[in-house]
Image 1 (tube, rainbow, N blue to C red):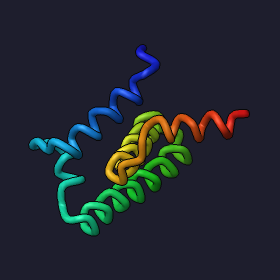
Image 2 (cartoon, rainbow, N blue to C red):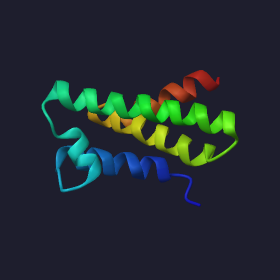
Image 3 (cartoon, rainbow, N blue to C red):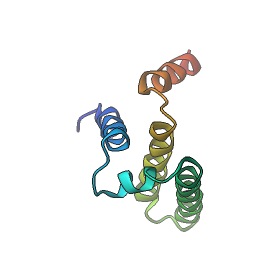
Image 4 (cartoon, rainbow, N blue to C red):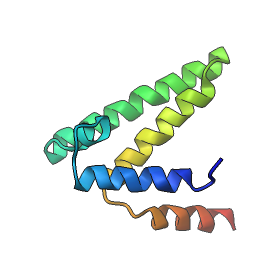
Length: 95
């Protein structure tokens, strides 16, 4: 497995934000600022609930966790947070 897959996904999200195509993520980020952010936050809320349920039921926890992480990355890309800033924060907290 490519250990840099999250960075590749993030670059794709930034590209879909800046160069929208007919895709799920482009459509999620393309509305006016308030509406797009609300849709993304709603998805994060849904995915959070699904992670909790998956954990309690010992089912699909990996799948649901990836969905939650993905939608969190969508939010960060939408808000134009640089991927390096995210990595730097992880590095800072790891020390």
